[in-house]
Length: 261
Length: 354
Image: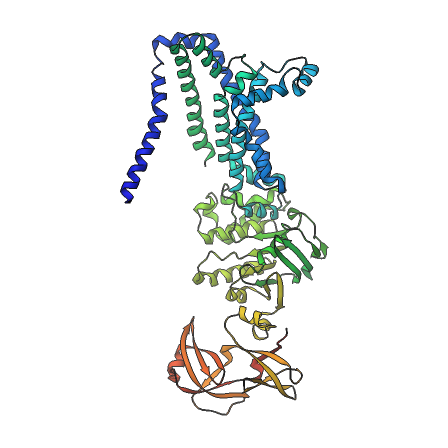
């Protein structure tokens, strides 16, 4: 096959992918019009969108705090013989249906279950149906993105930098702060954004652990069941615009201007 | 005073072993470790710097044992093959990096002095990717020197530089190390570089040090064929000591009798080395003081670097290096009859079982 024919076929396939992604989204945006503004003005809708954005942001922060150190250990092969086992475990959430995750979490977070009971006895509140439960559900399914991305970032750093830094008198802690973190920052940030994006979109695990307080995906599902398609379509369209807006802003303003210098 | 002493150190890195390496570097001295890729030179430096754990043996810096100290406590500077400038810091911050962790007197003055010396004034705000290799090298040296390490280890820092430029850079490196009176170990696989930079030389192969000594000692008195092979092409033969008198040996090599100086028993199997530049060619058999003179035939003349390599068959094949002008003056050609000679003292003899 000639190069031209090959590339023509590949470009056609690539074009189909672009259409496949963009067509439904563009169609959805048509739901944003004067007639649907009242939908977005409704308090429960606004709250659900706020819940989604704020809780997923919190999730991404928690993933950062816990995930980056783990990614560092993995990148340095510090788990020794258990390395590939640990790596597999970290990625397990990616391969489980999210409703299964929800059920599994329910069996530890429920009021009579091991962690749920502890919280109920210690702090007197039930975990399920709370923002905490939503964050845990989001965290479970989105943590791998932070770890994997940060791990790749750390792996790309030549070991000679930390060696030279050590001979210049920097302790391992200082080296992590002044060499590893700054050099892996774009990978860490992209892991953060992926985690945030994944957390915003989480439905399956969240709906099982906490139907209320409503998050946007649950609200959309509720509207789809109880009202009509155009109401759920409108909420979906606004969520789409808001999440896209946030990510594009972050991606181009924060990443390119501040981080990628 | 010994600045650095390695006392029979052993390290295991994966399948590779560094075995019983003992070396010492005097204050202000530059030791060159010469060896092929995979000889363990870098591994040895990393062990000295503390990146690899010692299995046994001891390391001392000015008499203080540092065998098990952390790398950042050893006071050993390291300049790596890739120079390893931190890509996210400009030249100024690269040079100043170590001063954040080590108390240095008069940091500002020292910084200015180094910047001036290396001519880096106009580059201070640049990032490493905007620097040439030569500039990067200067920054790497300034960064290592500003915290005044007791020893500097250099791991093939010129390997990215073209051979044409390398000699000049090597001279610069030597003069910098001498100016700052830095005791150092310089690792390379390039024997020319080893001669230019080193005060002392060590030959390393397969995790072991084969020989240590001055450049001349190693060049003219290699302890084995392996060592001789590191220092460029040489004439190597194996023969038997068939006569000895007054410190002179006669060595039989496939019927050819060569005179040498040395102390070996009759019948000892020996290896002899004759540097090609010590073999002289003559059109006529003049009387000279050289005790080895043979008649032979030129097999071939081929260029070898700056010299021409002439192979002569005298019953065994001997190689000589001559300048192009000598070849022209003597009108040397292949298949020509010729006389060769070399002094008995130019023949280096070692026991073949070494």
